[in-house]
Length: 202
Image 1 (cartoon, rainbow, N blue to C red):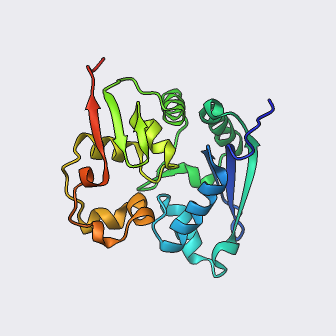
Image 2: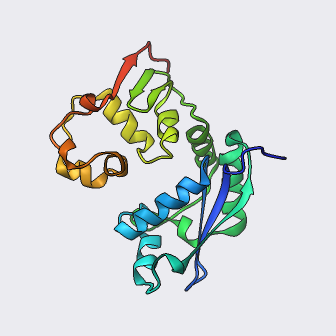
């Protein structure tokens, strides 16, 4: 299928020293590439195994090869990412946080599909953010290329009076990318986060 967007699709990161790989999907591959390298350089990458491999290499960013392996439409990202994970069996995708083996299941595929196309089982309202208003926390997260994760969007929009602590600032890729430390002590609502509620549907 021909895709007019040459920046939406599936990519692979290969660690040159070991040949181990990581497969990911993004609606903006170039931006995602930048964020991967930025997080690895700062030592804050979400994938602990990839971070450890990067730290042990003496060549910095040159130890990684980042390449696009397929372009596709945004609503196909979840399906195509799953297909490549199953086909390539990338080592770095086999770890989640504490190092447990990652199993591709039907429920995981469905979760990925909903995350990537911005659909949720429940519709609770409009998620208000500094970068726009969205019908779901998934859609809001996608709009900033997951710099602010879907659970994080949900949390700060449904609890906007939470104070931003130093710890929260240090852990947040979104805050570090868009604000300096003067944001510490402010509330998320001060930044423009909130929720216009509608009737929940089970």
